[in-house]
Amino acid sequence: MRIALSQLTTGPDPGKNLVLIEEWTRRAADAGARVVVFPEASMACFGTPLAPLAEPLDGPWADGVRRIARATGTVVVAGMFTPAPGDRVANTLLATGPGVEASYDKIHLYDAFGYRESDTVAAGSAPTLIDVDGVRLGLATCYDVRFPELFRAHADAGAAATLLAASWGAGPGKREQWELLVRARALDATVWLAAVGQADPGTGTGTGTGTGSAPTGIGHSLVVGPDGTVRHALGAEPELLPADLDIDEVAAVRRRTSVLANRRPEVWR
Image 1 (cartoon, rainbow, N blue to C red):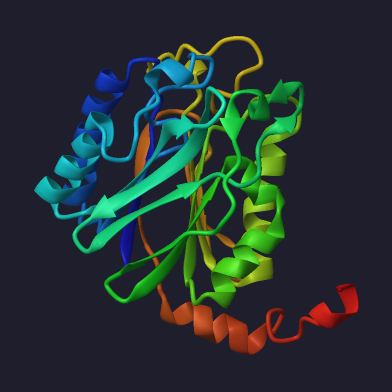
Image 2 (cartoon, helix red, strand yellow; image 1 turned 90 degrees about the horizontal axis):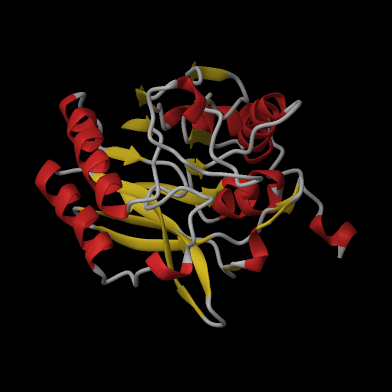
């Protein structure tokens, strides 16, 4: 399966960001991608007031993504914000395209490193998986990568890969943590891990305007095999990364590295 990671930088205007999604999706489709994955907060960058711009999954922004997916014949996965009770929003991944219509609300909220996502965002409560051409894919968002249980749940549900969308916060050691965590989640769930983050807005080629402690992205998207090895990686700048996932490799790795089969959950109950 060929996927494409769209490491771009979004700004505060959902309409302008939708134009970027159309441009990058067409580039990915021209490169032969079946699935195009955009970062968390593709609808609008963090540091933007979220509640006023949140839209339901049947609203105009999501419908715009659906139109793009239909026009290009791809499955598009993109981060947006949907309304939630109590003047908060849900940090939502929309997955849409031929034969696919699903959404995932981020389960683990980023209350760390001086930022409190839970002040404005309501947590999701269930994993989401999609099927594309007979291949099952799990969905995850940013801070989820610190919690291996979600990725093992994807594997237990038959996923061969997890698509991880992020807007990773900058800071000392954060890039090293990002790479380590992505590799670890691929290895301990024995799945392909396709992790796309917002590009670093400081590269001078993006439009992001997040302020204060809001995470705006560091780039360094990567594709990791089910054995934990990095197969493809980007730098900090906006860039498109097409990548082929060998789905048969998942079964081969699981035969050699039986970490899923060797678990003893009864010990920890």
